[in-house]
Length: 250
Image (cartoon, rainbow, N blue to C red; front, side, top):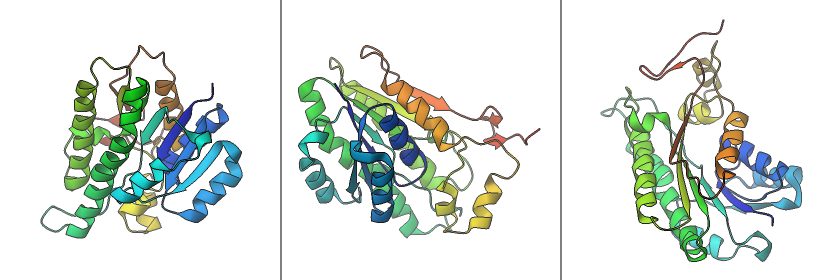
């Protein structure tokens, strides 16, 4: 039987790579994202096993409507990958933009909650399903100017753990997926479209690529049902977790 995954934040980075990998491996994928043009391009590339879902996960009513009206061919959902998220700004807490803080909380925390709450009841009813929340290694590791972004990923870590507690006795699985340094559009958003500053983050280092993480997510999702990976950290070999530093190439 073909399995169905719902992946948020599918128009770039981890989400885009994960959608492509799952479709390649025979899954059907509901890809949720805000950018219509990118969604349609993905649909053209990935074919009929990809369903583009234009959705702003910060809008609770829109989330509920979207998941309540999925095409029959893309239900029920076996796997939810809560991937949509972002970091904005690199200012200290007393200099940071409250608007940026609100956007990160609304996306990284509330959007994840809305999607989980919309799809989890059916998983519990069927006693089958898996929720993979994309957190970060910085969810348990403070760093200068990380303030709300790091804290939002700390929420994801603890919410995932508590979700697992609520699901005790159920076959529904929960994983907090925690990547380290990743080269993607992530930094471009953080630096407000400044490509030069974004590129400088990855200069002369071997960071992870979205495709690396897509394969790991697929592995975790396809383990036997009696195996639940609670937390998984994936970092570049050259990354020093003690200081959140990267060794140079060579």
